[in-house]
Image 1: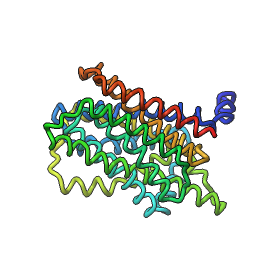
Image 2: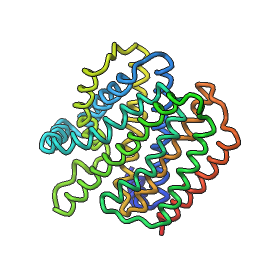
Image 3: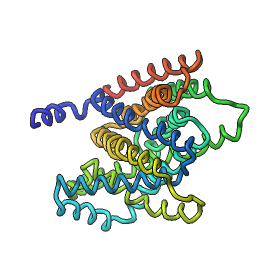
Image 4: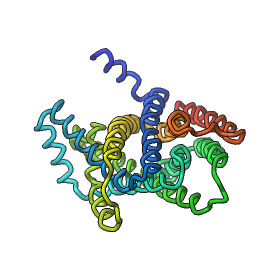
Length: 323
């Protein structure tokens, strides 16, 4: 184990290593789009798809903290939340609550891989978020991020039915808002970590990626409570309990922890962009999953061109991150 840790330590700030971690998170995160679509087709309500995921995530992480770190560590995690309640509620509501509720809602109107494709707007949104927080990005990074966005758009257009504008808008606009919410929440955490480091404060707790997932999930709960009272949600089915548990493990725990880990090790703005851009892999993983499990068809010529353009943009962006 020590040899593995030393190996990881050696490469943990390398752009290629961060990209691999980012793509692994994209693989596990793509399960969200696939399973949410299956739940929607079975008549499950989007609210339970979102709420149950976070309850499961919190449950699994509590068990993990107590089992592997001890009860004292878990108490320290809770103390971090209570002492910084406003911060974690704000960042959790934006980065997890708003983001995921809208992703689940959009699954009612678009196939999972199309939602995953539209979600890639977050790559472009991340640039605006980073710029807003004072991070300087080169024109080349902007250019090739837009190339990725154009490639994703071509894939998207290859399967959109423009005759059904209602489904198009309801499957697109919520994801557009979610695409900005997620990087805002993550960047708030990144900025908080930077602030504490500059002030020489203890960062033992928030350096743990699993802890950050737990705190952001816990911070999103007030929003889910509000949504419960303003929606007619009914009760979840037995199948929905099981399916959302799978999402919680694959996406809520594994994918999000990998992504936050990679982001925490990105020590330059260009590396942050590369990690965020790695999430474009969700499109291809989600499409492959839908082809296998939900009988989706291959993209047409426009879609294939979009895939090639996206890969070129992503590879170039990674090279820029090494400079």
